[in-house]
Every structure is written in C-alpha cells, then in structure tokens.
Length: 238
Image 1 (cartoon, one colour):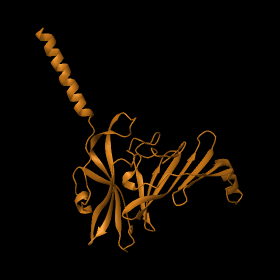
Image 2: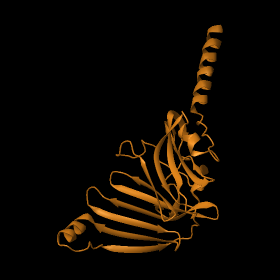
Image 3: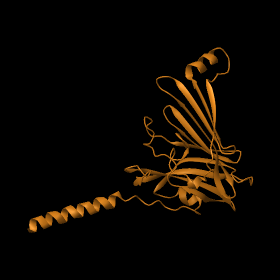
Image 4: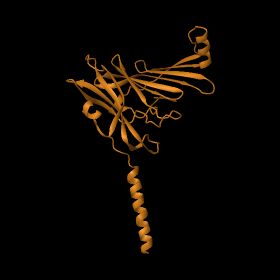
C-alpha cells in the first residue's frame, strides 16, 4: 500500500511541476523606463532600432524591438499551444527633456524568430519617416507592413500593406488596408506579366483591382495582438 501511495505522490508532484512550467512567463513592464536603462538590461538585447520624429516636436524619438536572452513560455493566441521561445517586445520612446522614455509597449505583436514558416530566423524591420512608424515583416514569398501615427496620445494604425506571390502559379496579390478611407484595395496579377512588361520597357499591368469597404475602427499599437489575428473583413486579416 505504501508503495502505491509513494508512486501516486511522485506522479502528483511531477504533474504539479509540469503545470508550473506550462504557466506563461510574465512580461516585464517597461512603461516610463528610459532607453539607456533598457539598453543596459542584462536579460534583453536590442534586435532592431529606428529613430525619427514621431510627435512633430522636431526632435528624434526611438522605436526598438528587444528580444529576451532566456526562453519564455508563451501562449501566442487563444487556440495556440504553449510554446517556448525568445520573447520579443516592441517599445516606442518619446523624447522628454532630452531623455527617451517608453510611451508604448506591445509584448505580442512582433513575430518570434521561429514563426516565419519556411523562413528561418525572421526579424522585423522598423522605420520612422514623416512622423509615422512603420513595422515590416518579410517572409519567404510575402511581406507585410503596418504604419502607425500618433493621434491624441495613441499610436493608431492608419495603413497596412501586404504583398504575396504563389510559388507554383506565379500569381501575385497586393493588399492595401486604408484606415483613413475604411477600404481595402486588392490588386491581383501574375509575375510573368510583370516581367514581360519590364522587358518591354513598360509599366507592369495588373489583371484585376477590387475595392472592399469595411467598418472596423482603427486600433492603437498597444491594442494589437499577434499579426494576422485581427479579421477586418471575411478572410482578410491584419
């Protein structure tokens, strides 16, 4: 009897350890922290960085993506299994008395290095121009970019663009999600048509352009979940 009790106790203890290990790792809160402090943080390193004026005060601001040096236990979406990877956090700093302080933090929006499908070790790209922050991601046969602008204290999505090409057919598709007009412009073509036009010195012709209206309100950067989780219209996600 004691043998069975001991085995049960070991089994129960193992389950408890496993359950504890499956609990998602808590993300740190960097809100209000300075860029200098975060760059010296021993648990994170800067993966990507961009500078430029975001709040139209004539001074440079900063956006960075930091990656954890240790593995994080994460559940990336409601239907996703528990995963273990290096976490990536997006931080946007505004200049305040000649010091960069975190204004916006997003813990989940930036894809992890192993979330690129056939693309191994993907990394994001950040740029700041015309008082707008652009966050881009390149995959094997597609890319997507999101453009945010500071409005009433929040970085709001104003535009998103994606491009893709089908490996077998060469069919191409470009989508522009315009939140100033609440419309999606979808342009479909074929890469062979574009190459032929280029060789003839002409501008590439597209086969079809469709405009779809939508009623979704723009989201702020801090509200975004993982990429391609937000359904704008049926079968169209950001």
